[in-house]
Image 1 (cartoon, rainbow, N blue to C red):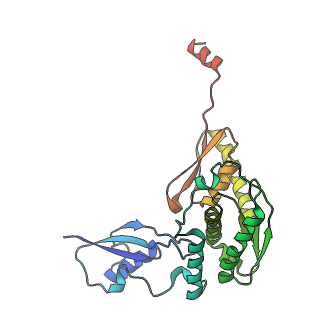
Image 2 (image 1 turned 45 degrees about the horizontal axis):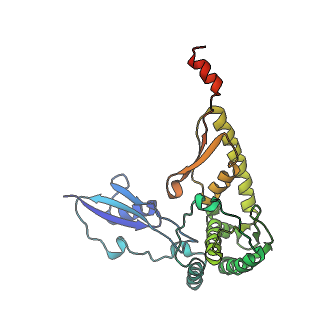
Image 3 (image 1 turned 120 degrees about the vertical axis):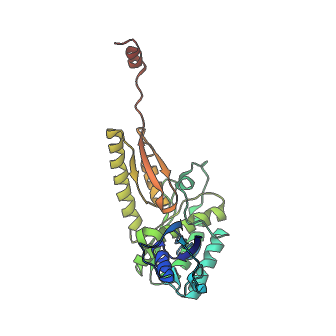
Length: 288
Protein backbone atom coordinates (compact mmCIF):
# COMPACT_ATOMS: atom_id res chain seq x y z
CA UNK A 1 0.00 0.00 0.00
CA UNK A 2 1.33 3.44 -0.92
CA UNK A 3 1.51 6.35 1.50
CA UNK A 4 2.27 10.06 1.23
CA UNK A 5 4.48 12.22 3.43
CA UNK A 6 4.65 16.02 3.25
CA UNK A 7 7.94 17.91 3.54
CA UNK A 8 8.28 21.67 4.06
CA UNK A 9 11.26 24.00 3.58
CA UNK A 10 12.15 27.50 2.43
CA UNK A 11 12.20 26.35 -1.21
CA UNK A 12 11.10 23.35 -3.27
CA UNK A 13 14.74 22.36 -3.76
CA UNK A 14 15.34 22.41 0.01
CA UNK A 15 12.16 20.38 0.61
CA UNK A 16 13.30 17.76 -1.91
CA UNK A 17 16.70 17.56 -0.23
CA UNK A 18 15.04 17.19 3.19
CA UNK A 19 12.92 14.33 1.84
CA UNK A 20 15.98 12.62 0.34
CA UNK A 21 17.87 12.88 3.62
CA UNK A 22 14.93 11.65 5.69
CA UNK A 23 14.01 8.75 3.38
CA UNK A 24 17.57 7.86 2.42
CA UNK A 25 16.82 8.21 -1.28
CA UNK A 26 18.45 9.98 -4.21
CA UNK A 27 16.58 12.72 -6.07
CA UNK A 28 16.07 10.45 -9.07
CA UNK A 29 14.42 7.85 -6.82
CA UNK A 30 12.07 10.33 -5.19
CA UNK A 31 8.48 10.52 -6.47
CA UNK A 32 6.73 13.70 -5.38
CA UNK A 33 4.22 16.40 -6.27
CA UNK A 34 4.79 20.10 -5.60
CA UNK A 35 1.90 21.31 -3.45
CA UNK A 36 3.21 24.87 -2.98
CA UNK A 37 6.22 26.80 -4.25
CA UNK A 38 6.01 29.01 -1.18
CA UNK A 39 6.23 32.77 -0.87
CA UNK A 40 8.81 35.10 0.67
CA UNK A 41 6.05 37.49 1.83
CA UNK A 42 6.66 41.09 2.85
CA UNK A 43 10.34 41.61 3.77
CA UNK A 44 10.42 37.92 4.60
CA UNK A 45 8.29 38.61 7.68
CA UNK A 46 4.59 38.76 6.91
CA UNK A 47 2.75 36.43 4.55
CA UNK A 48 5.71 34.01 4.37
CA UNK A 49 4.75 30.55 3.11
CA UNK A 50 7.07 27.58 3.01
CA UNK A 51 7.40 25.36 -0.05
CA UNK A 52 5.56 22.05 0.34
CA UNK A 53 6.05 18.75 -1.51
CA UNK A 54 4.10 15.47 -1.13
CA UNK A 55 6.26 12.37 -1.47
CA UNK A 56 4.99 8.92 -2.44
CA UNK A 57 6.44 6.14 -0.25
CA UNK A 58 5.77 2.40 -0.15
CA UNK A 59 5.69 2.39 3.63
CA UNK A 60 5.84 5.03 6.34
CA UNK A 61 9.35 5.25 7.81
CA UNK A 62 10.17 6.39 11.33
CA UNK A 63 10.73 10.12 11.20
CA UNK A 64 11.75 12.55 13.89
CA UNK A 65 9.30 15.41 14.64
CA UNK A 66 11.61 17.92 12.93
CA UNK A 67 11.59 15.99 9.64
CA UNK A 68 8.06 16.92 8.65
CA UNK A 69 6.18 20.19 8.98
CA UNK A 70 8.25 21.65 11.84
CA UNK A 71 10.00 25.04 11.71
CA UNK A 72 13.73 24.94 11.11
CA UNK A 73 16.20 26.16 13.70
CA UNK A 74 17.52 29.03 11.60
CA UNK A 75 15.61 32.26 11.08
CA UNK A 76 15.29 31.92 7.29
CA UNK A 77 14.71 35.27 5.63
CA UNK A 78 15.13 37.24 8.88
CA UNK A 79 18.93 37.36 8.69
CA UNK A 80 18.95 41.08 7.92
CA UNK A 81 17.91 42.15 11.42
CA UNK A 82 17.69 40.97 15.02
CA UNK A 83 14.69 39.10 16.43
CA UNK A 84 13.59 42.21 18.33
CA UNK A 85 13.83 44.33 15.19
CA UNK A 86 11.95 41.68 13.21
CA UNK A 87 9.05 41.78 15.64
CA UNK A 88 9.02 45.57 15.40
CA UNK A 89 8.74 45.36 11.60
CA UNK A 90 5.81 42.95 11.93
CA UNK A 91 4.09 45.37 14.31
CA UNK A 92 4.81 48.18 11.87
CA UNK A 93 3.20 46.31 8.98
CA UNK A 94 0.18 45.44 11.13
CA UNK A 95 -0.12 49.09 12.16
CA UNK A 96 0.00 50.30 8.58
CA UNK A 97 -2.31 47.69 7.10
CA UNK A 98 -4.48 46.57 9.98
CA UNK A 99 -3.84 42.95 8.98
CA UNK A 100 -1.22 40.73 7.39
CA UNK A 101 -1.20 41.58 3.67
CA UNK A 102 -1.24 39.33 0.67
CA UNK A 103 2.31 39.78 -0.71
CA UNK A 104 1.11 39.78 -4.31
CA UNK A 105 -0.82 42.93 -5.21
CA UNK A 106 -2.39 43.16 -8.62
CA UNK A 107 -1.70 45.77 -11.23
CA UNK A 108 -5.46 46.16 -11.67
CA UNK A 109 -5.55 47.54 -8.11
CA UNK A 110 -2.71 49.91 -8.91
CA UNK A 111 -4.01 51.43 -12.16
CA UNK A 112 -7.74 51.55 -11.48
CA UNK A 113 -9.30 54.79 -12.69
CA UNK A 114 -10.72 56.96 -9.93
CA UNK A 115 -12.71 60.12 -9.68
CA UNK A 116 -10.30 63.06 -9.17
CA UNK A 117 -9.90 63.88 -5.50
CA UNK A 118 -8.24 66.83 -3.86
CA UNK A 119 -5.09 65.63 -2.14
CA UNK A 120 -2.93 67.45 0.35
CA UNK A 121 0.36 65.77 -0.62
CA UNK A 122 2.22 67.55 2.17
CA UNK A 123 -0.10 65.88 4.69
CA UNK A 124 0.26 62.50 3.00
CA UNK A 125 4.06 62.79 2.91
CA UNK A 126 4.13 63.84 6.55
CA UNK A 127 2.35 60.59 7.42
CA UNK A 128 4.39 58.39 5.06
CA UNK A 129 7.85 59.63 6.06
CA UNK A 130 7.89 58.22 9.63
CA UNK A 131 6.58 54.92 8.27
CA UNK A 132 9.50 54.65 5.82
CA UNK A 133 12.02 55.87 8.39
CA UNK A 134 11.05 53.19 10.90
CA UNK A 135 11.38 50.40 8.33
CA UNK A 136 14.71 51.70 7.00
CA UNK A 137 16.08 52.24 10.53
CA UNK A 138 15.61 48.55 11.28
CA UNK A 139 17.26 47.31 8.08
CA UNK A 140 19.82 49.94 7.09
CA UNK A 141 20.19 52.67 9.75
CA UNK A 142 22.94 54.47 7.77
CA UNK A 143 20.61 55.22 4.85
CA UNK A 144 19.44 58.79 4.23
CA UNK A 145 15.91 59.67 3.07
CA UNK A 146 15.13 62.76 1.01
CA UNK A 147 11.60 63.86 0.25
CA UNK A 148 10.13 65.37 -2.87
CA UNK A 149 6.62 66.49 -1.90
CA UNK A 150 3.97 68.69 -3.45
CA UNK A 151 3.32 66.29 -6.34
CA UNK A 152 0.16 65.52 -8.28
CA UNK A 153 -1.72 62.49 -9.57
CA UNK A 154 0.29 62.26 -12.82
CA UNK A 155 3.62 62.93 -11.11
CA UNK A 156 3.38 61.72 -7.51
CA UNK A 157 5.90 62.72 -4.84
CA UNK A 158 8.82 60.36 -4.34
CA UNK A 159 10.92 59.42 -1.32
CA UNK A 160 14.51 58.76 -2.36
CA UNK A 161 16.69 56.53 -0.17
CA UNK A 162 20.47 56.68 -0.55
CA UNK A 163 23.52 55.23 1.20
CA UNK A 164 23.67 52.43 3.74
CA UNK A 165 23.01 48.84 2.69
CA UNK A 166 21.12 49.70 -0.49
CA UNK A 167 21.50 46.20 -1.97
CA UNK A 168 19.68 44.66 0.99
CA UNK A 169 16.97 47.32 0.88
CA UNK A 170 16.37 46.69 -2.82
CA UNK A 171 16.50 42.90 -2.49
CA UNK A 172 16.72 40.29 -5.21
CA UNK A 173 15.19 41.68 -8.42
CA UNK A 174 13.77 44.57 -6.37
CA UNK A 175 11.72 42.28 -4.12
CA UNK A 176 12.25 44.19 -0.86
CA UNK A 177 11.71 47.56 -2.51
CA UNK A 178 8.45 46.28 -4.01
CA UNK A 179 7.42 45.13 -0.54
CA UNK A 180 8.10 48.57 0.92
CA UNK A 181 6.07 50.21 -1.86
CA UNK A 182 3.24 47.76 -1.15
CA UNK A 183 3.22 48.70 2.54
CA UNK A 184 3.11 52.41 1.64
CA UNK A 185 0.28 51.94 -0.89
CA UNK A 186 -1.89 49.93 1.49
CA UNK A 187 -1.07 52.13 4.47
CA UNK A 188 -2.11 55.28 2.61
CA UNK A 189 -5.33 53.64 1.40
CA UNK A 190 -6.19 52.66 4.97
CA UNK A 191 -5.27 56.06 6.44
CA UNK A 192 -6.74 58.38 3.81
CA UNK A 193 -9.46 56.19 2.30
CA UNK A 194 -8.32 56.49 -1.32
CA UNK A 195 -5.53 55.27 -3.59
CA UNK A 196 -3.09 58.15 -3.39
CA UNK A 197 0.21 57.36 -5.06
CA UNK A 198 3.49 58.11 -3.27
CA UNK A 199 6.59 56.48 -4.77
CA UNK A 200 9.77 55.29 -3.10
CA UNK A 201 13.12 54.75 -4.84
CA UNK A 202 16.53 53.52 -3.71
CA UNK A 203 19.70 54.78 -5.40
CA UNK A 204 17.75 55.45 -8.62
CA UNK A 205 16.86 51.76 -9.01
CA UNK A 206 13.18 52.34 -9.80
CA UNK A 207 13.82 55.06 -12.37
CA UNK A 208 16.35 52.87 -14.20
CA UNK A 209 14.01 49.88 -14.08
CA UNK A 210 11.09 51.99 -15.32
CA UNK A 211 13.19 53.24 -18.23
CA UNK A 212 14.22 49.70 -19.19
CA UNK A 213 10.63 48.43 -18.92
CA UNK A 214 9.20 51.28 -20.98
CA UNK A 215 11.74 50.64 -23.74
CA UNK A 216 11.01 46.90 -23.66
CA UNK A 217 7.24 47.44 -23.68
CA UNK A 218 7.40 49.81 -26.66
CA UNK A 219 9.68 47.45 -28.57
CA UNK A 220 7.46 44.41 -27.95
CA UNK A 221 4.31 46.39 -28.82
CA UNK A 222 5.80 47.30 -32.21
CA UNK A 223 6.80 43.69 -32.81
CA UNK A 224 3.31 42.47 -31.85
CA UNK A 225 1.71 44.87 -34.34
CA UNK A 226 4.20 44.01 -37.05
CA UNK A 227 3.94 40.21 -36.72
CA UNK A 228 0.37 39.92 -35.48
CA UNK A 229 1.61 37.66 -32.67
CA UNK A 230 1.17 38.03 -28.92
CA UNK A 231 4.34 39.01 -27.04
CA UNK A 232 4.95 37.70 -23.51
CA UNK A 233 6.91 39.19 -20.60
CA UNK A 234 7.56 36.54 -17.95
CA UNK A 235 8.03 36.75 -14.19
CA UNK A 236 7.67 40.47 -13.47
CA UNK A 237 6.22 41.99 -10.33
CA UNK A 238 2.91 43.82 -9.99
CA UNK A 239 4.76 47.15 -9.92
CA UNK A 240 6.60 46.26 -13.14
CA UNK A 241 3.39 45.13 -14.84
CA UNK A 242 1.84 48.45 -13.85
CA UNK A 243 4.63 50.30 -15.67
CA UNK A 244 4.03 48.26 -18.83
CA UNK A 245 0.24 48.72 -18.64
CA UNK A 246 0.59 52.50 -18.29
CA UNK A 247 3.26 52.74 -21.00
CA UNK A 248 1.00 51.02 -23.54
CA UNK A 249 -2.33 52.35 -22.25
CA UNK A 250 -2.81 54.79 -25.14
CA UNK A 251 -1.55 52.45 -27.87
CA UNK A 252 -4.68 51.73 -29.92
CA UNK A 253 -3.07 48.86 -31.82
CA UNK A 254 -2.53 46.55 -28.84
CA UNK A 255 -3.98 45.59 -25.48
CA UNK A 256 -2.27 44.24 -22.38
CA UNK A 257 -3.45 41.44 -20.14
CA UNK A 258 -1.97 39.48 -17.21
CA UNK A 259 -2.38 35.73 -16.69
CA UNK A 260 -1.13 33.20 -14.16
CA UNK A 261 -0.52 33.26 -10.42
CA UNK A 262 2.21 34.57 -8.13
CA UNK A 263 5.77 34.49 -9.47
CA UNK A 264 4.55 32.69 -12.61
CA UNK A 265 2.27 35.59 -13.58
CA UNK A 266 2.89 36.77 -17.15
CA UNK A 267 2.01 39.94 -19.01
CA UNK A 268 0.67 39.55 -22.54
CA UNK A 269 0.94 42.24 -25.21
CA UNK A 270 -1.80 41.34 -27.66
CA UNK A 271 -2.17 42.94 -31.12
CA UNK A 272 -5.68 44.06 -32.01
CA UNK A 273 -7.10 42.80 -35.28
CA UNK A 274 -7.18 45.48 -37.92
CA UNK A 275 -10.71 46.34 -38.94
CA UNK A 276 -11.52 46.18 -42.63
CA UNK A 277 -13.21 49.32 -44.01
CA UNK A 278 -16.87 48.85 -44.92
CA UNK A 279 -16.29 49.58 -48.62
CA UNK A 280 -13.60 46.88 -48.85
CA UNK A 281 -15.95 44.38 -47.20
CA UNK A 282 -18.65 45.20 -49.77
CA UNK A 283 -16.19 44.73 -52.66
CA UNK A 284 -15.10 41.34 -51.31
CA UNK A 285 -18.75 40.35 -50.91
CA UNK A 286 -19.39 41.23 -54.55
CA UNK A 287 -16.43 39.13 -55.67
CA UNK A 288 -14.49 42.12 -56.99
